[in-house]
Image (cartoon, rainbow, N blue to C red; front, top):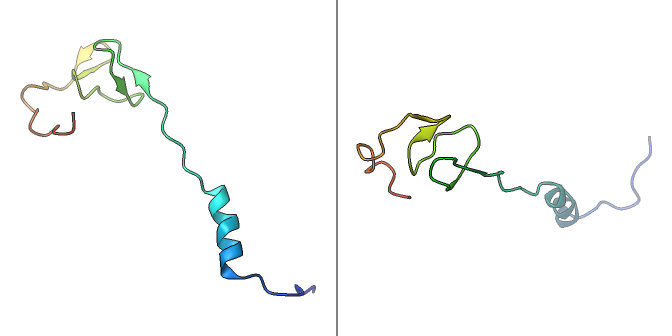
Length: 68
């Protein structure tokens, strides 16, 4: 079995691994009801609609959605 001439430092192997582990931002779709950006196949947190139906009453649960 072949043996490497010199052992690579940890930093070199970690740099190589990190170059292949880049994260991508999720694709966002536009809500047809209010026009805000949302994750696809999810309820819009701004208006509460999904597939032209009201799923969440936003006024009732607006204390849960502080980040909007």
